[in-house]
Length: 86
Image (cartoon, rainbow, N blue to C red; front, side):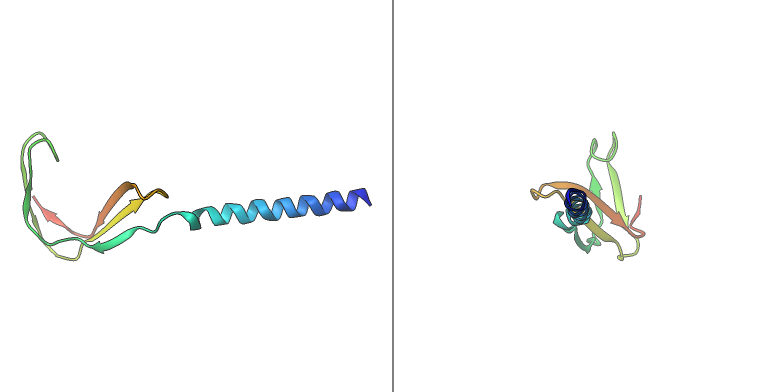
């Protein structure tokens, strides 16, 4: 009898651990996905490199994805698509 309760306890702990492992990503915030603005501009010196860089969008089909942590703080940004001619 003690072996059976030990086996049941182990099975319950294993199920909780597996369930917790799959539930953790569900708690993260979803990325903010939006079209990237199709506007020419200039990066000032020191932002992109040591000198000013002018950029011109070439296609208008870029996507901007912004990622945030659980507290809502900005973590990273990824821009995809053919975007700039420099």
